[in-house]
Image (cartoon, rainbow, N blue to C red; front, top):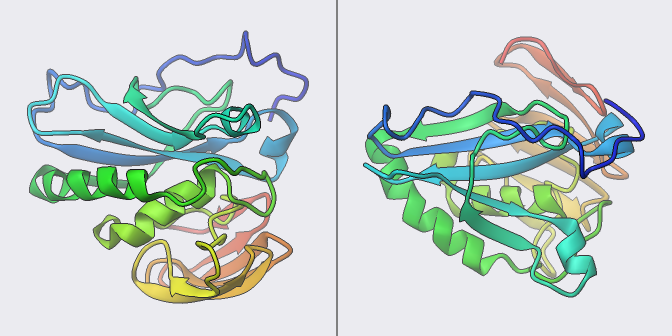
Length: 221
């Protein structure tokens, strides 16, 4: 994590993780995570979703951008872009992917979920709703993504209005969460996670792996 960066000059080049559309004709969906900008990156990541339909020539990137909500605009941005850009100096990693027929079926559902996101004009870095709340919402709406977001995705446990019980972002289990600040999650993909003041600790027996706040996953995926 590099502190004191100027966002206007931070690196936004492609990390080379997404197949070139001209070389990859099947549909594809990729979920990305990169350390958040500046000091927030010590604790958290920013996540987003990229989609490309079959024979598509470009990717569409779906994400929430906080400054837009602070200025009274919709925080949800869905536009044509390079899907694997560095997030203002932070190199992303792919945390979920669908290819071919599975991706083609999921893309319309993803686009519908993006339009239904309930916190379009609200944003809070902690405990949410934020960019990770958005990505997790799409995961719950499209369980075939089996979205296993890292514990450093602070805000992923922030649920829709008035809800305290929901499916896990992966769709393979359930969670209890109070305003994204305290809760527990148990799912086949994520394992067991405890959320304390927005910071998550976890254990994934399938790895096996330990998940720690600010650090993420220690062990095989």
